[in-house]
Length: 435
Image (cartoon, rainbow, N blue to C red; front, side, top):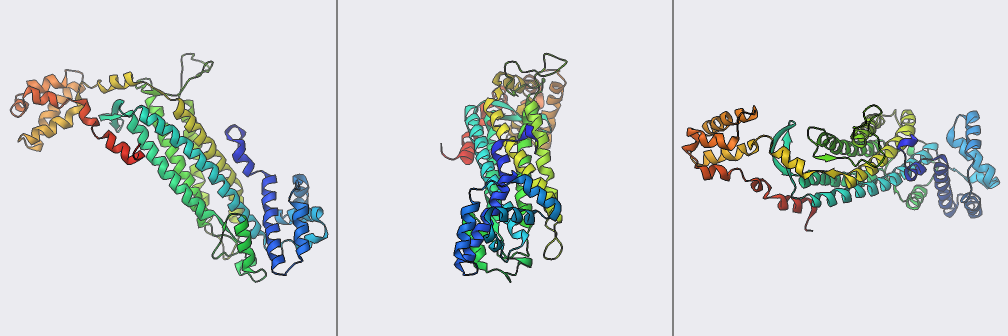
């Protein structure tokens, strides 16, 4: 985790003290269940809770023990015994390290997902507000980066809103899929521990029992989780790249907010650069990068190995912390985005009416021209305008082949900007529902 790109709420989920508290809760809940089943004394389970629930675990001490034992869970259990006393011998009865590690990881991932869902809600709120603000603000739509036909800036933001709505639904599903608990012992057979212990711990930790574990929780669940984070990151970059393009000097239809005292360049005082959007592109790449090791972690040897462990120690915190920061940054960027409708109109007019070429093409075919001829008539008048050698409407009116099919009034009718925007309300209802 890089402090520059870390928010404290998400970082807290991955701090050692948080991890050890979750480990303790797993062990203590298991002790409760074992006590109810008569496997360990009930007084022992009460003592474990009483002495451990408010304890501050000594991270340095646990690290010291681990340097000798070379085993993190044993180091923790040894330190816990120092806190709990003799009753600690009843801790971890019939359990294996993965029961603690995997269940803890899934608790952390579900908590992280909850924060990320709240972040997405902030992005959605910002997009919706700005989309309705610019619902009918006309701008040019581009394909291949080239002017195509008119859209509205509100539609651009509505596209993003729909995409992040899908992202939210996927994350809800990924959270549910990863929210499982395994307290099944060595190789997952429950030979040394009753399945009812797993059920008790799962309920207490807000998880579901893993239907079948092999000493580890199957990593296809985690692969889906991190793949979902990667897709969300891709959606962030898609919107960030759109803003970067719109802020280019030659375009300048929208621009990141530039605060008082902000500097854009150490060399050129005039610069106002899309640094937030560019930052989001970089952060998104890092989140997407973790999808590959998550997929590779699915493949473990037999019932268990730990080839996944080292990767997860990095990817769990890094992917969630980075995505959390990126989503909050994106929400703020959209909230404060500067929008320039006059520049949008100016860019709409740059090609001298060529954005209406398809309407003229269709009008000619409806009047009897073949599609091949209609395309030829329109294109031969469009190309001089493309080169800056005239006005599209004027050239069409002078073309005898066009005039065979369309009057001046009929040609002019095809240049109505409003025609392109007549279904904006329909699209908004599809995206946002009845508002």
